[in-house]
Length: 548
Image (cartoon, rainbow, N blue to C red; front, top):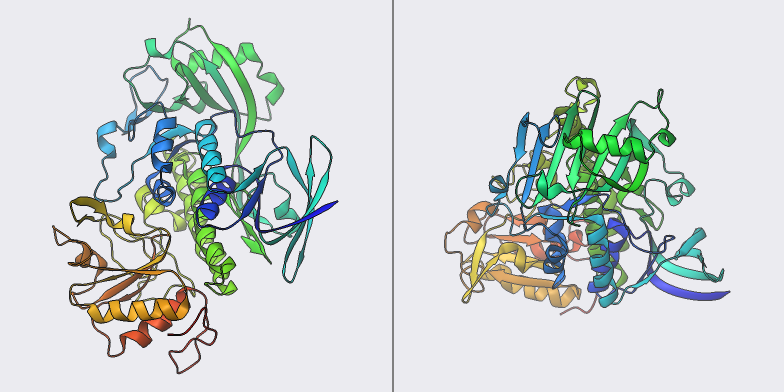
């Protein structure tokens, strides 16, 4: 049996695993991804990538354009409707193409590509950036040691087994994966909400549906509840229909019955239908009681199972991966303390909790208004707040003296507070118009006001001392804020400064001057990277890199 070593082993090539491999490889971290399937998904499954997910992916050059190129519909070309059938009078129109303009919130647009189009793009970029991705490869077993994870991998074609030693492992093996159970992790929450049959079909949709773009219909039909969605392949669609498992079994849904369900969903009795795939699944709402154990980190459906009403499950998976990628990269390169990784579960589990609550609320509001009893109202927030306004709190975030403790904020009214996402503002760099988010991605970034030269000088010294990636941007020098919006949205003065992590989240803020900017920033930057600070001192107990 051959023995190999890799810094990060990833198990599972869905949204979480492929995103993690892409973002780790782009950051220069060698990683291996193994997937028991022979290829990426051949079925659309999830549809769409929201703005926050596009923000964390667009840092990889070319990836954003490639994702849009994979979608048949253009950016933001989406229509969401509640109706009895796809051709009946709408009960309610939730989203139209014109309602999706959110340039005040994000530089990114919504990509409507299905999972069968997205996964190959992520796979290509993972490999092009150096990730080792192997399909038809199974994780047979694993064990943890003090210095890493020992995994036995099996090549399904040859039967050959390989021992891989990894510093860390990402479990992205899905809702039915085995890694979670091996770690004794339990799932909590409402559980199964509905038994559902998914049908992928082909029909002359161009003749019965108006316009182009992506269309999603939530169906309140007298015969069933469900949804119909258009796919990237022309004249292909997918329906998801709920059924009563006490009266029907999945095997009852043969091609003839599914053809009729398609006709009922579309409201065209004589429509010619070709069935491509019939697949039963269970809509559930569950959250792992832990998102890590030892050197193993759970991401995506392995960690949280989210009802697919509103598309938050796939987005949370991508964003889990993004959070892990930048933190693992710093730790693997000895630019941050291993304790930084403790912040992953602390920060991401609350995000998954509110995503589940919002998805259940969407399910009730859009499909089953009489099921108010299943809502988790204490964790419910608006869709925009849930998808883009969630707040982080952990030891790696240095809160303001007076922190309101809110779980979310309105992205249209950003606070600039530590733990919040960096506000998007259009800036000028030379002749180029850029977003504030175009200045982040690989390094920490210190933003300082026009009169914040002391902070810039301090940041340059801290970067040399720590050896960790810290860049600077001074308003009025490096970039110009033509509408004078950025500093007010950050909540800092011309003398103030703000420290932003590679994921675009604010980890420290000084509203104005400091009597000792070097000591203040050094301590804050150390804490943001998981370093311990000696009590009563600004010095780091264990410096990473050389001192200046």
